[in-house]
Length: 95
Image 1: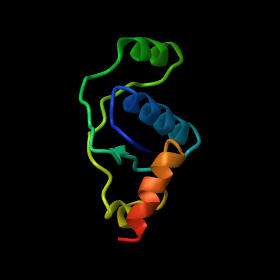
Image 2 (image 1 turned 30 degrees about the horizontal axis):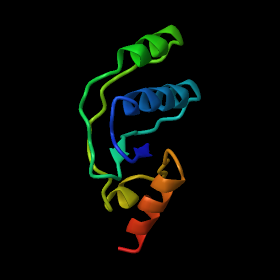
Image 3 (image 1 turned 180 degrees about the vertical axis):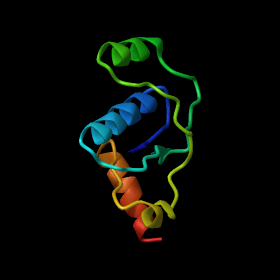
Image 4 (image 1 turned 90 degrees about the horizontal axis):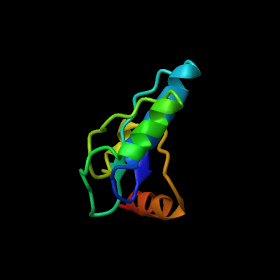
């Protein structure tokens, strides 16, 4: 899962995606990364943690890291959060 900044929001999206994959019998290895220069380690947002728990999702702190060119070789599928992140990731393809 690629977003501009890895922040308190990213673990929720990661946890939901991971549980959906497991529920559908997909044996995926997942990681989360950011495309921007801003990686925040504020820790889990309490409201998101509560909401995730209420809906049966795990909320975990992911390994915070920058998106790397090597991710294209390391992963079969790369999901991005929005069009801006898609443009950032695609711009790395040219490198």
